[in-house]
Amino acid sequence: MKHKGKASADDLRPEYHFDYSKAVRGKYYRRLLKEGANVIVLEPDVAKAFRDSTAVNDALRSLLKVARSSQRLTTRSSRTARKRSAA
Image 1 (cartoon, rainbow, N blue to C red):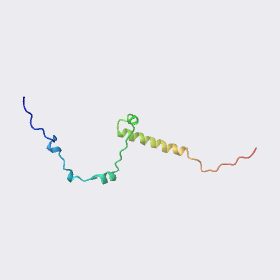
Image 2: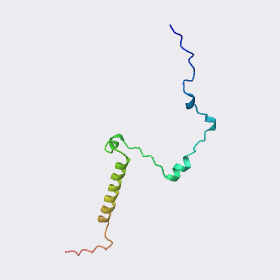
Image 3: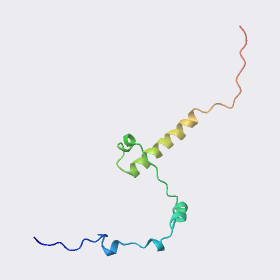
Image 4: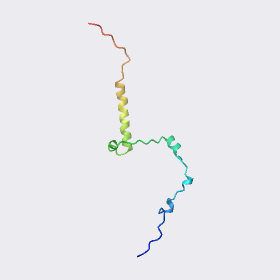
């Protein structure tokens, strides 16, 4: 029976070792705020309806367009109502 070599406590390759003492917390935070990165999580049933983020954006733009056009149709007239005469 062959004897296996020493089992090291750390089995990661050297290229995967990271020195956390040199890490900077929130290094890209300001850039993400400036670029306007938003993450929106969809419910699973809604996510099934769309193949990717482009499809979601297209659907939302269509919805906004319909909402704007229907809003003009439902605005009240600025004209005052006529009083009814008692008959």
